Length: 145
Image 1 (cartoon, helix red, strand yellow):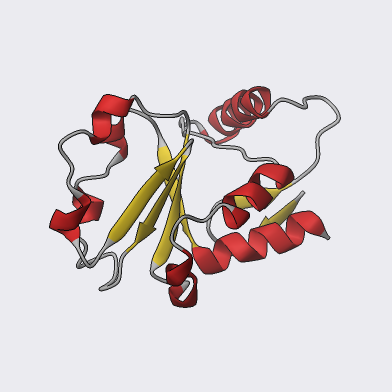
Image 2 (tube, helix red, strand yellow; image 1 turned 180 degrees about the vertical axis):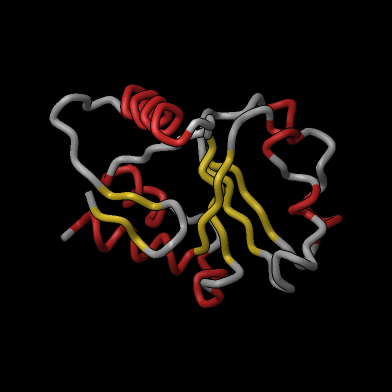
């Protein structure tokens, strides 16, 4: 296992489990047993990370890697969760939901973001953890080497 930065990212291979859902449960159980608290664990495979980077629906945001985020969701949210959220109301911020990833460009930063207060894991009904684009590119590099 290799950790990346100080942000809860771990890169590893597993011979005991190959399905991400199984790995999520195993890691969450291990954390609960060792540290005494429960956390949501979200796993993506190396090929999924590559698809997330290559499938970026907001390519102009890549030059702003600290303010461009990807929210990794524990499951695909119900379509109804985004109804009533007009992207134009949050301009110049941009967001796009692709499968289990929520791409978020906080042009003025996360603290000033209006959309970050709306697109929460509570509203989406699934667990979410976010990583900025710079970190995501580092994770992808580690998983392809």
